[in-house]
Length: 282
View 1 (cartoon, rainbow, N blue to C red):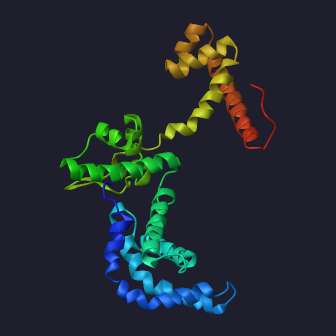
View 2 (cartoon, rainbow, N blue to C red):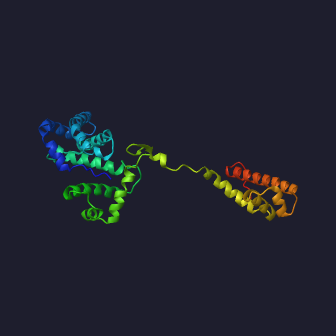
């Protein structure tokens, strides 16, 4: 499972605090943006200016999540959405600093993307949350212990049961399933698709076989015995005639008639199932 985790909002904020002087000129823009009404065309222009000015912050946060298997461009788009939400909701009259408000907002938007949208297989939200929590705990415990933590240690750290931790770890296959084109190992050109089983061609004949079995069961005893001797035991018509105490010519006529009747009933039943005719009583 992926153990790389994004750093805390406080750490991210400290990294961008050095650039606060560059953003100081934007404080009056925030004030003017907040004073504009929702239908004021000037508000949209100011919003665009603020978003563009803070785009480097959003991109920097997006790159912190880049090792989780998602394209960087997608993460930057999500982070930009978070930035736009932050600009729209920021109140310069109440908040001390925009960055201290925007960084957690942007990181929260990216985390929601991983929780709700980045999963390849539909997974319960509780399992998603535990998966992310286990990833964060694994990273923290690895640094503290100097080794990979055990399931019991992760469970104790998160106050979860071992079963819940195991389920969260197994959820990695739902988040990032293996590709069928992925090679099996170094120096091995075989892919996973090469070693998977193929569709059994006999599947298409299962229904027909079941239909034939029911039709054969409805035949008289002599015809059933004759078919069994011919197609199961592979006896000749002469051998069948000897067993049934009838002539070989009679066996030939009975086989032809019985097979023709079975074929007609099977075809009629298939047509009925496809909606081209009335059902056939079996």
